[in-house]
Image 1 (cartoon, rainbow, N blue to C red):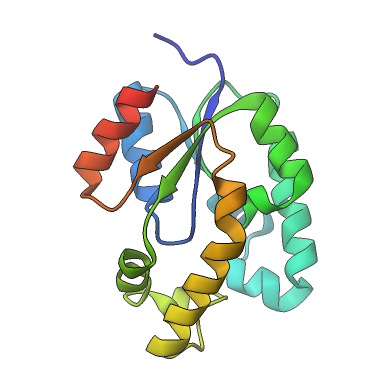
Image 2: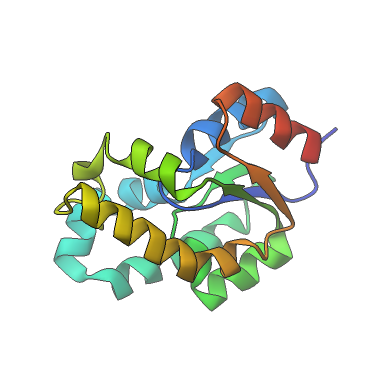
Length: 171
């Protein structure tokens, strides 16, 4: 059955949005679009380079540009950056044009996953293990009420295969 709306995967960095989004899109036979990869391709810079050069507010403006570009796209699976739904205009777009799914992962699993590739994530690059745990706990406390506005919440603590099966059941 064809999608009537985009499927937007939301959640904290390390929750598996990109990995699961690509796999889900393949199973549904639709396009997969990662908002961060889209920004990197259109700007021809990494997220870290963009943030270093122009700062977070300009990066958030690029995320909003992404929503405008999606207006002409066929319904796809979209993996949104972790901070993407925090901006009111982005949340407005998600709520009108997407079926949103929050990939809920507990802070222990996130810390474990994120410690493997901290250097590639601007917010985490200079944190030691203790600071990483504190950062994740604090940010989750702030972000989770926004993420929980999603149409669905899926437990993302399991394996990729388990989580993809959960996502398929929701759609």
